[in-house]
Figure 1 (tube, rainbow, N blue to C red):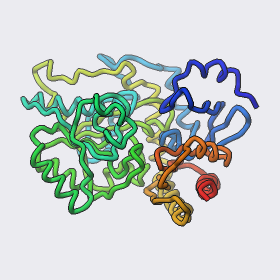
Figure 2: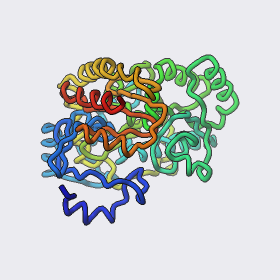
Figure 3: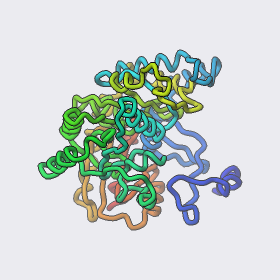
Figure 4: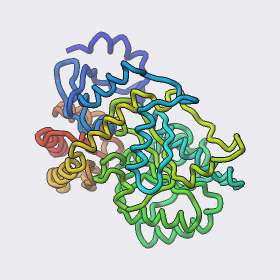
Amino acid sequence: MADPRWLDEGLPHLWLPYAQMKSAPAPLPVVRTEGSRIFLADGRSLVDGTASWWTACHGYNHPYIREAVARQLERMPHVMFAGLAHEPAATLAARLAVLLPGDLDHVFFSDSGSVAVEIALKMAVQFWLNRGETRTKFLAFRGGYHGDTLGAMTVSDPEGGMHHRLAPVLPHHIIADLPRDESSVAAFERLMEREASSLAAIIVEPLVQGAGGMIFHEPEVLRSLRDAADRHDVLLIADEIFTGFGRTGTMFACNAAGIAPDIVTLSKALTGGTLALAATVANRRVFDGFRSDDAEAALMHGPTFMANPLACAAANASLDLFDNEPRLAQVAAIEAILKRDLAPCRALNGVADVRVKGAIGVVELDNIADIAALRRRFVDAGVWIRPFGNTIYLTPPFTIAEDELAMLTGAIRRVLS
């Protein structure tokens, strides 16, 4: 079947993400989504193994979230958040403060994960400026990814990451190995002794470095970072945009380590994959660093669609589903199935590693020679799996049916065989 007219007419004017437009294959035309499935214009449906970049944790088009957004749309789709406030945002902020670890009580809303990271970096730098200190450096980690905006790129891996081409022209921060073993722990501690006085913050993706290759680390790493930040008086930023809201098995990845960062960034699954929303949440120490009789000590930031009421209504509905439906138990069940069903891949030629954490399953290859061809083969198998680098990964909706999850894992085994 030919592409629908809207794609034929519009595609020449679209600039697609992460795509070389001279050679990129045309995107698949989607007409609707439901549950764990993507329905194409030609009548096919694909089981989604990515939950649309890890956002649709409750599946697509969940009626409870849809109805909450529809009710809010009738009342107020949007209003500026400067000098005005509304119930969905106030309720959401209070709920996040209760859910998050420690005293992460102060919520600054924005509309994308990259912007949430930008705000976190800005908060950290200005926190020290308000105290009379100039600290302009950040400590980030190899394999890390924190977004596509300029500031977020500067704290992502400058060599192995997707933005390495821009690394020579970006401001440089300190990129280190995660302190995982005796050697890297010692190197990290020497670095902190040398650089702490210039550091505004350490920034880390807790438990899983997502877009950098789905690289896992143990909770002990987070505890060591929290300890080092405390000993050297440096802020700790946890980027939970990927890991937040159950993906790794606990509501937030930091819960698994029993630590609370000074600042946390949230997005992706915050609204259940329904609308764009992000949050940068600070603890009381950071928040109090901006309270002053000096007006210029305020955080001068305000996204136009900050705290959009529709998005906040969706996020509140998503939290209701976490409260009332067994999402974390579903994640545990997915984890067990992924461990069982992906394990046979270890015996296949070209497979370097198989690993699972929560509702994340990873098959890492020695090399993917033709990633576009591999993606097409998954589509032909009736699934939407989008490998990147040398990594095939699954991050399905938590509500996925067992037979649909079996389609995803079975497709990986068959295609790699």
